[in-house]
Length: 260
Image (cartoon, rainbow, N blue to C red; front, side, top):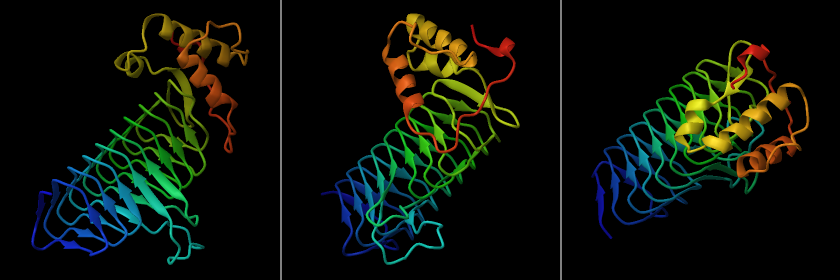
């Protein structure tokens, strides 16, 4: 097992580190932590108790993973978890907290990119290939899907859902759910067209795109989606719409903004 650990770093005896780990100056890795192969822990980064991390993750300086949830009723002696997938990048000042529930989990998927000073609160779930720009903050119990882009300074209220392939305009405040595949922004926040660029980058083009465009027009009219040709994207959308929403769904703006 090859490891490159700076002599000023602190590694607790109860931490489990994989192969080819790099740990920078003054970094701290506490007990009950599992870190997979090929991870890099930057200078002054802290991985606190009850964090389980996959392979190939990169923590830039001053990242803190697994601190106590910001919940005044939480017992600090309780065991709860932060679970992180593979190949995520956490830039300077990123923070993520473990769950506020006994044996609960805050979950981050794989291949995500979290920019400076962004935050994932307790009991949140973030999918794969999602990007948080600088200073994005999501409250407790928020669900963010895969392939989502959150613009700089976005703030999300507790218990909201942000559907997969959505893009949220920078500085938007969300207090309701964001529909998958959509672009949302404004004050107050409104859906106003499909996330055209993001869908193209994800390979959702041609007939797949046309089906989603038709679905969007029907949603604006509050009409059912049953008449549309079935597709995996439409199935994802229907399943998301059928799931429980604790906050409701943000509305739409002018019909002239509908993406054709």
